[in-house]
Image 1: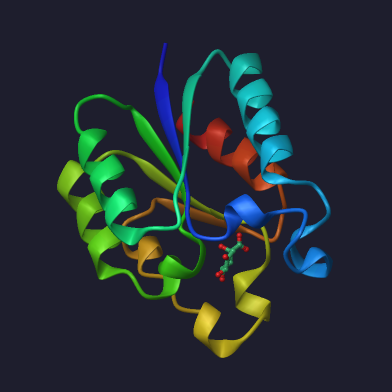
Image 2: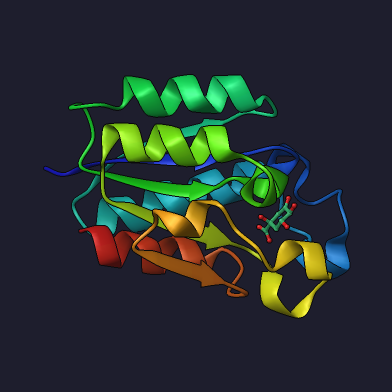
Length: 140
Ligand code: DQA
């Protein structure tokens, strides 16, 4: 059974509260339930992790070395700033798919650049929760 690590970055724990017109009204608990359910349907073992701290995310990715077959990451705002997260992904060299709930290309200019996409084999954005399902399909 393939093991997938799902990493959600800062403020994703605020889903259902934050900018509902952009991120929708469902909360983080609903997202977790959705991902677990979709993973189960595909026969994938999934581990979910959320953190608001860059270093914790780096550490979690490092710990994934030789333990996971794939990573799905929505690094939140760190997407646009974090060379450290990019380097951690490069270091462990695990297949990675980047997900964003919103369409980062049709928002502010600063959201158009993603450090994560320099390593991720695919970036899925603007599909809401379904983006995670697509990412599972790519990695399964
Ligand atoms: C996000 C997009 C980012 O620009 C933003 O900082 C987030 C969420 C998304 O899922 O659409 O926190 O990654």
